[in-house]
Length: 344
Image 1: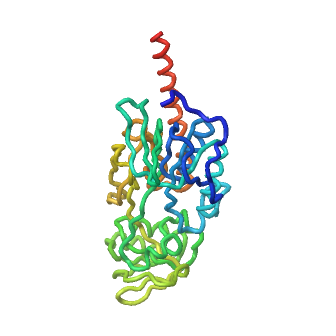
Image 2: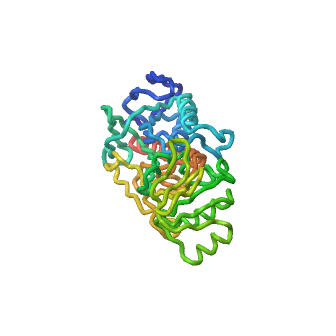
Image 3: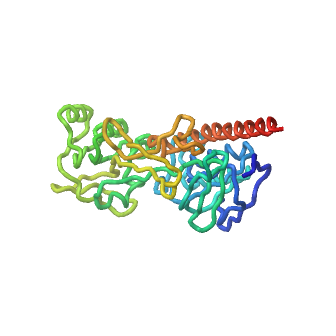
C-alpha cells in the first residue's frame, strides 16, 4: 500500500438517493475503513477526513435507534430524529472527502504479519478494498424478552433508558417489566420521572430489601408474568398478565445486548461478557480508552465497546479514537521514513 494516502478535497461518490450514501466505493485503497455508520463511526470518519485521511464508511443501514422518534441529550441537536442526525453526519463526512456506502462487510482480515501491510475488507455487494486501519463501529443488538408485542413497540412505547426517554413520558403511567437482575435498580431510576410506576416481577422477582425500597418511593409491585404488550403500533395501552391488565402509556424493560461483529471474524476480535450489577447482560468488544482493541490496527467506538454510551457519548468517542488512530499512522509514516533514510 502507499506509504501515506491522503485526500485534499471532496470525492464525489455515486449518490442516487441524495442522503449521502453511495452505491459503491470510488477507490480500492483507503487509509481507514469504518465498519458501521452510526454516530460513533461517522464522528470518527469526520475527524479523520479533517486530518486529510481517505476514509470509507461501510453502513449496513440498520441503526439500533432507528425506531425512536427522537434522540436526546445531544447538545444543539436535542430532539433530532435519529435518521436525520445520521443524514447530517454523512453530509459532514462528505464535506471532507469521506465516502459512505450502503453495504455489509462479509469478510475482513490482515494482509500480512506486518501492521503496515494493512487489511482487506470484502463487501457483500462484491468487490473488496484495502485499508491501513479498521474502525469497528457496528453497535449492539438488543435481545428482548419473549413477550408478544414487546418487539413491535420497541423504541416507541417500550423503552429502556430514562435519560433517553424519561422526560417524554414524565408523570405518566408506566409498567416496568422485571426481565434481568438489574431491573430493580432500573425501576428505582425510573421512579424519578413518574409517581405512577408499577413493577411487574415477571423474570426478576424482588427480594425483601428491594421490595421495601421500591415501595418506600411509591412504586407498586405486582407479582406474575407478562403475557402480552397491548395496543396498536404507536399506541401502547399496557401489559396483559395472567390476572388482568396493567394499564400504561409506556413499558420499560432492560434488554440483553450482543456485540454485532458479523463478517469480522477474520480480524481475530474476541467479545467478553457485559456484566452489570453482577449479572451477565450480554457481550461487548473490549477496547482501551483510546479505542484500540487487542488486535493491532483495529479500533472500536460506540456501543459495540461501550454498551452504556448514549449518542453523544459515541460521537465523542469517535473523535478521540480517530485522533489516536491518526497518530498511529503518523508514527508509522515517520518510522518508515527513518528506515529509508538509514538504508541510504
